[in-house]
Length: 159
Image (cartoon, rainbow, N blue to C red):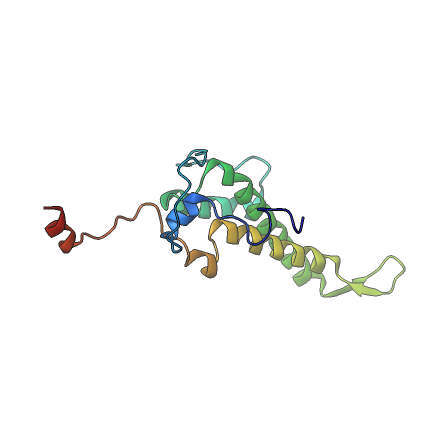
């Protein structure tokens, strides 16, 4: 709602995402933000089928390895994988039936799979971005498993 105090402007970035990005704004971090638990490994739910299941098995281990997947992010992974499955099925339908198909009245119409394909690709972009699965959002993240390089000058200062 525009004009509501504290609610306008960009959405706040979660503290863990700020840490993963190296806290570029150098602002104080919220030390009291709830921690919903890092996901170390999880199998895909039974309702994610086909190519979506294959995608889950490809990306979840990588997200877990980089320590960027939290329990509260799992719905984003589910939506991304289900959208990917829809997108792949739509691409196959368009390849098999063409861009123009016969409508209910017998006339030519745009293949409805094109609409499904477009909607699924938008969902993939949105939820993939939330997970750091595209080049733009990935460049802002630093994996949680990386250690900072030793600073030889820090040893001199710290003794």
